[in-house]
Length: 238
Figure 1: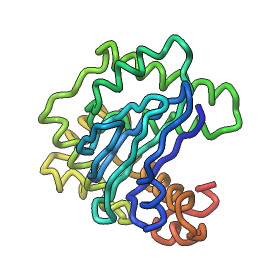
Figure 2: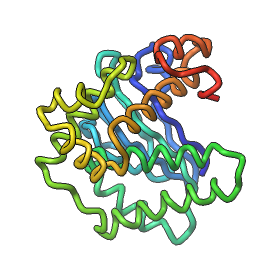
Figure 3: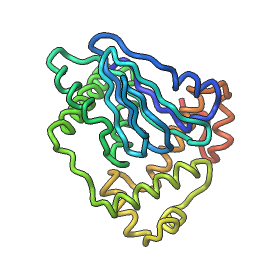
């Protein structure tokens, strides 16, 4: 794995300029973009696609690509740059032809866990992150990842968007459940079934990722994101 970044709500001119640049990667390199929220257009080669929450794009080696968005569209996504083996060429080519791959909100924690392990100094954890990416791609290619029921997906999408938009607020479980008109107990069961974690644990993780992203992509001091994320101590981010 060559790089793995989390970009939270693109909003500064500097960040927009960098993340919207037209670029490509070298031989045997490919990139994954998994969009969590926001909107825009994804350009790859001579094709362009509308970005929607839950869309996954696979870009092969030597292929120009770019993201087109604006400050008001609040685009949030993971980008993972990998180096493939010789026997994975058909896999990457086949997935690229399926762009965009729609997987709704249930890959958020997959990419968060991949990113956390990829950024450690532990060689075994870094290698496990690479294996998880390849395993995920083969599962998608082989049709092993099944979509959830559409009605359930709507509720999860709505809750994810609400948490994204209120990441700097002090939300409780009832706040989130009320906004999508679900009973709190049922919402917790549905969220765990889809996302593999509880809504509050997800929201806490989201706040931490937002703070990290601000530190990685802006010139803010560490106290600035912490002052917005009311409960986070600076020592917990690094």
